Image (cartoon, rainbow over all chains, first blue to last red; front, side, top):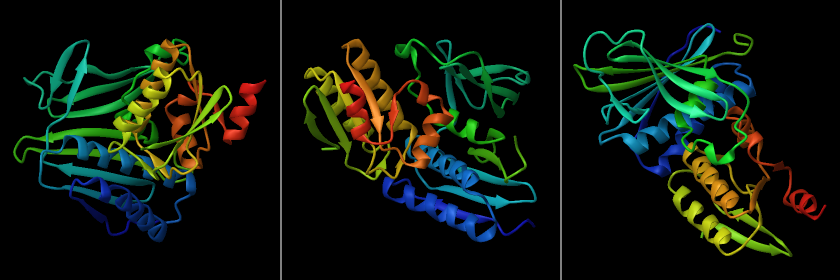
Length: 185
Length: 113
């Protein structure tokens, strides 16, 4: 389909707004494109987890979510000025922006368990790309199952998922890309 | 209360009474499930029939309760997942961690086998 006008959703960080905003975003895509049900399910999951993340971590103000459809993808961007991304990996706290200028190429594991890792591939000290790495069969020891799934849900629902911290405006931006039907495995 | 509890002989059906199973109710849900496990329930069917959507916080609470059940030699199964929730379980491989049934009746019948 042809690129259309982006849709903006404003989230004021109350739980009551969350699901109605998800529905508003999905209805916009249904009106603007011939998006299939499986893709809409992924959109729902991504919107829900992005807004839940904002509810948990945003320090105040409001969160903006932009929905945009281009020739091959649905692009969802979430912007807020809340707390920057923090990942605990191997007992070490990683907080954005990462210190120093030599971070590119580094991999920070954000989640591990149940046969997969969620890795944050560092592009520079402000930008990471999340990548799912399949490490083996599902966990047989259920006591070792992870209990934090938010970022993993988004990463698995998308073809591309990234986080960027803007130092000048202190803005966090998550960008999730979901292929339209037939565009992705 | 998040859960409505119904006893069925040696099993228990815990029906989630909210449509939006999200972080605002996840801790309460977890605490109520822990209470049932600590009370000696050995087979708990968590019924999602009334739930429209589930978020990661709620799933985290469910996994935490599963671990508590295992530690107490109990079992948690799930039933009544709508298409979106079933898709979410599959997406993050929780369909391998939980037995999933279409209905609570199916879950209870499986227990009776």
